[in-house]
Image (cartoon, rainbow, N blue to C red):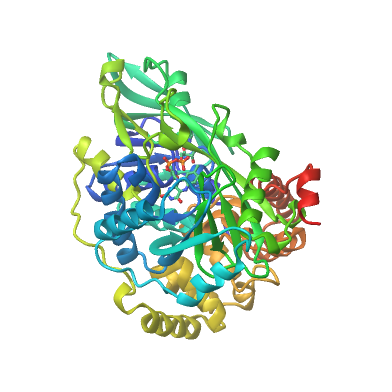
Amino acid sequence: MISPIATRPSLESERFHVVIIGGGINGVAIARECARAGKRTLLIEQHDFAAGTTSRSTRIIHGGLRYLEHGEIGMVRESLRERQRLLRERPHLVHPVHFLLALNQGSRRSALSIRIGLWLYRQLGGRRLGADLNKMDQHKLERLLDAGRRWSVFSFEDAQCEFPERLVAEWLVEAIEAGATARNHTQVLAVDVRHGRASAILMRDRLSGKEERVEANWVVNATGPWADRVCQRSRIDTRGSMVGGVRGSHIVLPRFAGAPDAAVYTEAVDTRPIFVIPWNEQVLVGTTEVPDSGDPSKAHPSPDEIEYLLRSLLQLFPRAKLSSRDIRYTFSGIRPLPFSPKAKPAAVTRKHYLHDHSDDGAAQMISVIGGKLTTAAQLARECADKIGARSDRRRELAVISGDNLDPALDQWVLDIANAGGISEDSARGIVEWHGKRSLTVARMAISSAELRAPLCQHTEHIVAEAVDAFSNECAVTMADVLLRRVPVAFGGCWSEICSRDAAARIGAVMGWNEHQAATELEAFETERAAFLRKPSALNAVLEAAAD
Ligand SMILES: Cc1cc2nc3c(=O)[nH]c(=O)nc-3n(C[C@H](O)[C@H](O)[C@H](O)COP(=O)(O)OP(=O)(O)OC[C@H]3O[C@@H](n4cnc5c(N)ncnc54)[C@H](O)[C@@H]3O)c2cc1C
């Protein structure tokens, strides 16, 4: 199999109608929108698609109940409309989740204000989502909570996209099918501004080192927390920062005895809202809000944040006997919030805006500021409208209708298992991650036992999915595959042995020689360790908490 890098044609001196810098969820959504409008579109990502903030989020598709406290009713309504749209269009990736809101007697929020807030949230959300609202969960949680304090438990519905990386991969494929050109591992060094207008970009392929210049009618800076850096490097004077970075960290633990099946929305030790969410057969706890203007690529949780999250979890589940040794890994991302130095991070709006650089001497250039996973498609439509790229926006058809999901999914799983000669478990995993492209993966799998082999001994996901990622989803490195296209490396039992197995199995099919396989493996392990960190310094207080 030919290396994906070797097949990239030169783009030197080519002209695009729109060049989008940054392949997070927003950049990919904008590229899809512009390409569908028939505009010649180029998407450039310095690392890999979804490797930035997008893969470091809490992964909830929500209106944001707490934003009601800040009076952001318009934003909540818009987010809930987008939640509905994602549930309808991507039911294999986005599903309803039953949330329990647990408040203890020390809360500054009254039960009455919560009831009013939930009532309003339901009204704004419209029809029921059909989350599995299990009364048992509520009673179980009430029993588990600290007996010494009185807790009030309320329930509501929201949604979760366990793997936004997969949503990004699907939108990316759709952008390319609509005619977009996409380059990952390519950094935009600067936007060339001539005669008061953004006219070109200079970029460097980080794998080959080759530099190229591309002409552009429009440039969209969708680099999230990196947005100011792109302007600074291009000498565009925005008269102050556009983004105020706020770090959010998570800890991931195994499912502990008594962990609820429902997602829990509660207050941390300092009464800030936090989530405890069943995720990927583990428990995801987050998040924090720490102002951070450092390099977003290097964001990681501080020991204080880890301690804070663990303490908050123990406040809720004191009988769980968890310590920092139980944490499987931690990760952080930088929220690219609008720069508001005087506001507390929690109070800064989560609404996105589009910064037009005409007044900064760079017409035909837009920077995307803020936003959420939930509203990325809406942001993309607004951005495309602004640059005159209006596509046909009729409702997309899901491969499986959300109204009839379970039986249709079961039948689709059987069809994929038959088409690929694979187990039903593998077929289910493929359907859940690859949606309408499952048949392509299954047709590849049927051709050889090596392609049907699992990526490692703990997973049902198979080598054919990795090969499809290299062939059709712009994956270039093994880390692109195992952390984003087929994100098995987030699994609870992933270890160095799994990494070695996966490298050997993928390498055998891709035709990697020994040196290539070793290089891929080493690069993957380095990236995994930097992203999904084990807490290093064990904190004595936290150790004691477990005794
Ligand atoms: C802790 C946390 C929790 C969150 N939880 C949720 C949630 O539960 N639900 C929700 O809806 N939203 C959530 N969000 C918000 C959401 O994750 C972000 O709004 C969204 O991912 C931003 O996407 P983006 O595409 O703008 O940025 P990013 O995903 O950061 O993408 C920007 C990309 O630009 C690339 N780039 C930077 N510089 C260059 C360059 N010079 N050349 C080329 N490429 C470049 C980067 O590598 C990066 O991949 C959360 C955010 C955080 C931090």
